[in-house]
Length: 284
Image (cartoon, rainbow, N blue to C red; front, side, top):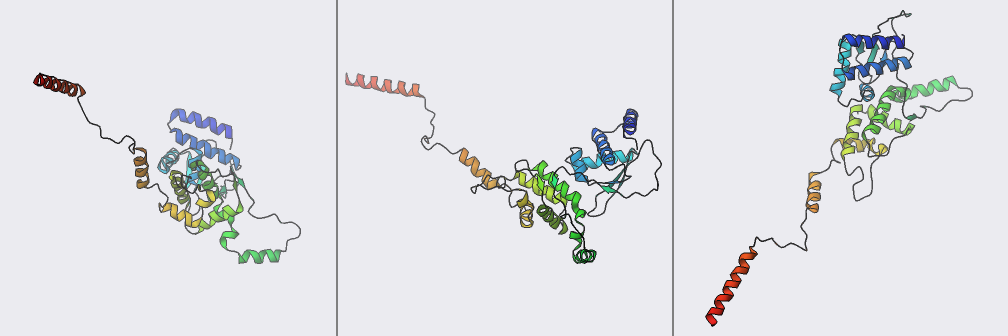
């Protein structure tokens, strides 16, 4: 596929039809990913990562933008199964002959954050029998750590995007990847992580506004017990706390707590003067 020819053809095609700005940007982002992967026919990428690419926060808005591309005949989508992202195929303006028709979808390898290697590099002679025995005794999660690689990348990117009040995540260590995999393997979804980050960003207590001089961080938020507590709303700002803050700010001044009286001082002075004159007349 000729990248430049496809872009020019796409712009000329837009002159004859209409696509929203979000749909156009989504097409360009999919083209970019196809180009990075060597123009594989199908590209596998999850919705949250594409939403981040096109700066869309609402899933419904993203789906409308994607469906518009599908209806226009510019993109084809294969819906993924549970734990597997959707697959996308750009429908080219200038189709080219390729050997074979079935191409295995490739996962997006790009990572904006620094990733540690899944395993340490092997040196010297490898005992094949020992390696095979070790692999058979390991569970499926450790055998296929790449199973959640896309989800891990999305979760870390969403943390940096949402949790602006917290320390920025710079490095995804193997310990952090194992913690995320463990959560995903027990039933948590990427959407659950996003919800945790959103609730944490709104929580004054977790952001450090407490009497302990403590604030949460990424490692604390992805802990199993902590995730459950945050999702259950145990760290939401309580209305009673806000009420106490308002009462504290609006408390009366104890040095000036006399009730104000509406007094006509002119009438008071006039009354006192008339009374004095009358006393003088009675005395005279």
